[in-house]
Length: 263
Image (cartoon, rainbow, N blue to C red; front, side, top):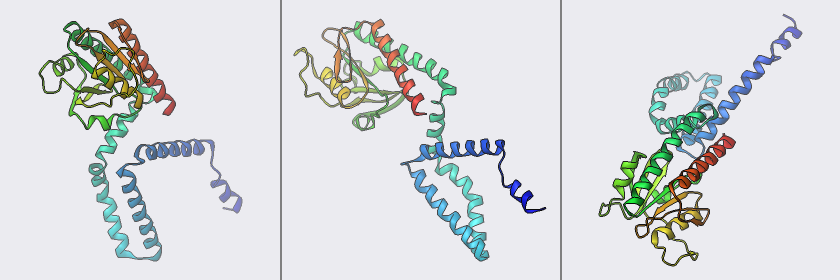
């Protein structure tokens, strides 16, 4: 084989270029998923061991090479245990990709139905409630002030939480996706003047959270049974259930579009 034939073997074809681009894209997405997590630190440690292995192999250090080979062989099983939270998060992020968007929309529609049903029941019974729906900005800071729930969103669960004299009825319920993350959470109160001085702490907390995050906060007044929604620092009052449904469907649609642009 002459020099020209050897150089031709090093020249990638269109299939090789596509394969390289796919691998690079997958590797880039993996790095995005694990950045700012403990997985990145572990990955750096594994990369350091791989570098030591290559150096030991070139220098002919048989003992170090065999030890690292054994470590890599059994380390794959240990990695599945160590990276379990990250793998679960990565699969959840995969479920937010374009190919699964239709299923996300069906799920969001079911969540909206449950929320509207719960708000309707609470309003008819004149039971006060405040429900914050997480969007792009996380509500972890506020979830820590309440009690973790980790239950699927349902009208029965929400109405039970806000039943008078129940342990968690005074605080806010935080909803993320199709799950109730926490109940009895404490939200920041707005310092701005509200349009009606008769509005109480729930409304001030709803506006306060909407000022600091992009969350949508639903408030049911126990005095008037009115349904209000706070978003972007503004309070919309006197909504009926159809208006609330339309607002929530539009909000989840905006969130889906934001996820699409970020994916």
